[in-house]
Length: 388
Image (tube, rainbow, N blue to C red):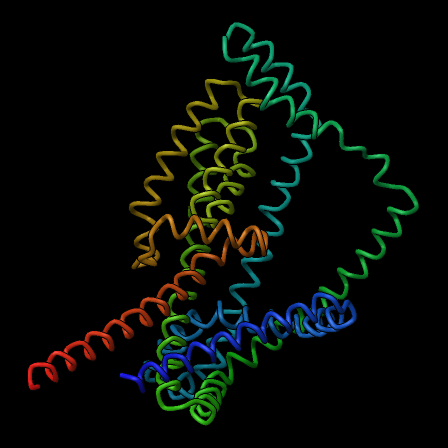
């Protein structure tokens, strides 16, 4: 018993020491701007490679599925060059999809935004005129519609083309050029990662085995596999589901005669990527714009149809795409999204769910292991007491 207490004290002291050291390091970095800037510049240099890893991660499963399909063919050439051909085909399809999106969807969305800004005052006046007989109209006009209209109208377009602004635009153009170069590097990097993924995984496996204890190595393999499964299933399913929601919502709005249907459908689809809060925000904004452009009745009908589609997506489409849910409490997901958004913005809100899911898996395993150890010790103590 004394030995267990001593070991427990040592473990407690060990983890407290690590926490103190991490706090000291954080404070040092927080107070030394130069070190923080250096770290920031270092990560900006690594950004193309990190983006390349992310691209390779997203495209890994399509490439693997296609590679397995080609390897099953009887043709020897296909079997021998299955990996290279699968990577080439997937990238061609992705580029074709991007080009189609840039040439078809983007112009429609840009035209809709331009037309909405140009006519927002006329839409607002029409809504005020049509809703003058409604009791709740003054509240909605003053607290919901008017702030939106004022914000759009207060955009000073002349100030956007001053000398200082032009310099800013030139700087942004140079940043855009660097961004294009970084994207090119990221694509090349992702191709190499996909082509040599077997060697990379084998090396990481050997490295982990050399650096970790046997127990630590087993845990590394376990959580790496679980984390990869959680992240890939979540990211791929959410992106595909967002596209499906955008398409069916745009079609439904078009059939209802809603103006800017493609813009609003795309907005709802992208907002749907953020659990819980995203869908509410997207639908609310679509309702406000529909009230301005089509009146209260059309907005109400549109809201009912979109909410029905959201429920169909949540109960039928999304589960089939995801195949299995993250199995996490909605309260925990909402907490994760709130924390992720507060510290890391929109990206944090999007990635919060899988990150917290993996943390929950690790904590659950830790708690279960500790409880099993305590139960085993209690049973041993009972046996010893019975023998005495």
